[in-house]
Length: 365
Image (cartoon, rainbow, N blue to C red; front, side, top):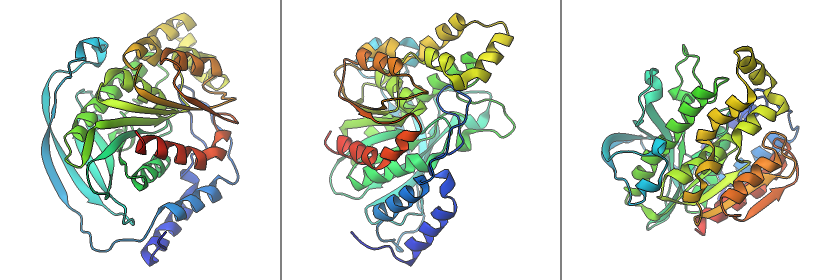
């Protein structure tokens, strides 16, 4: 293990200053509007992890811009995919710009390409990704990484860092209405008190992921037969849904994910404000659950069975109840599942173990 250079230590200092955002401390999670408690030692754990993961800085790299055209070609399995997630053959422009990195083991590129979905919010129509390209020789596996509902990107970057250290390329995709895709003057969010808007946001996310998988499959440094997807919480639910809709994604790891998402969103104690808004508009529980069923991965799970899948869940999850997790697990054909002790938020104590597990899973796939 190489020691950090002065530049690396300065980067660590900046991360310490902003560490409160590394593991989100006051953000709502999938399909709920509540807030969660703070774990007092999370900051220390994350700091140690960063110090371990980031090797020597490189000073010989200048920002580069690359451009190209990617092609989305439906596979022979397209007819088996749910109609709302199907795409026609298409070509799309992309560009990549190198951003600062302090690692010898990988470089990081900002990658953008148009979403296959056009919305009223222009900013949301461009997909923004961060591509952690490992420097190991030969064609390597690649993984699409999805973030949590709160949009706290450093946590996803931490997993991308780990994957790249394991020799796996990682593409961190920012889902609809997140980060640079969010118009500050717009009220739209990917997950909304209006379940119809949630359905539209999750559908767009899956179609964006399909374009991202086509972009990865086109890269010369990537083994297109070993593409995967990983997501946390809301990202895990979306990853499960994408796994049912994109045949190229053969390795799937889901952290804190579940199915029966309408039930999870309605029954959670933290979802009380959402329920009250929906009921105030004359909506019912049955309507809410039925609307969200069209983006429930359990509904389409047959097309994901047989893939290499690993589920990582909390034994006492208060946001994604155990019956919802088990519904997805059963629908996916009962793949390997690991239960971490704790709840949806206190499972952060197992961050080191989860990072190792995810890195090993995709490296060996």
